[in-house]
Length: 294
Image (cartoon, rainbow, N blue to C red; front, side, top):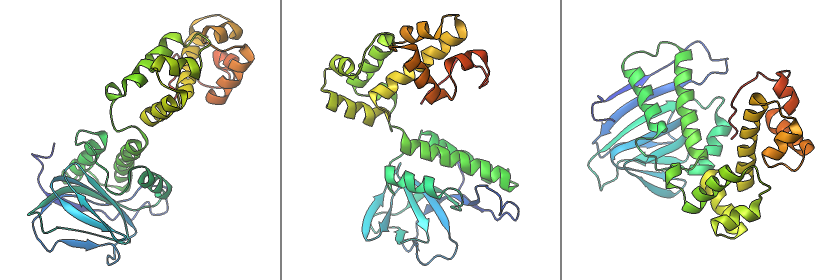
């Protein structure tokens, strides 16, 4: 991805937007450092407050954070806050450190940043073909091509990058075809049997695991519990039936595995924001033919 990119660093100081809920780009760059004296100390810098995302393309660097040292190698990112108790630098055991980075102001992003760090830590490994790296590559290309002319364009690019980074921290780092066979098989089981009165006991038994072990594995893999996934599957089918059939809500409830129309209505309203009848009539929400639940 980075073989044809020329090194460069681009800074931004926009006068407009300071009092608006915008995301402020400070600097983006792509560099190859060979100076053994290269070092930045987070408590000595005068340009904060900033968040730094720096991704190693090749070679490696090192970062010391609050007394703990971490190597930052290829396909690994460095996430630090400026000012902060850290120092990142060229270690003695390498001759170069090649990386792409972005610096942005923390305004409106503080809680998301903290949540993300709790999930992935300050030096996460991120595949080079991931949406996160595509997003920072796009941001750099826009900067190096001189296509960032105002704070609104800069804000959109920062937001897109940050949302991909935050999404990476929230979702499993591997694709569905790499999931544990028990998880894949149980998802297929739910897809085929959502209309039956199945629950956690039957799903875990089909997976060949104890309820505790299965629930823990499924949740760690997908980011939701088995029953949350089953409910999501049933509601997606419910939306299709509500829009494409004239069946009563009681009939639809039984066709998607709910024990009663009243319970189905309660669950539907909790997740969609209106009753199934209101949804059918288009009284409370814009009518759709398919809805995705996460």
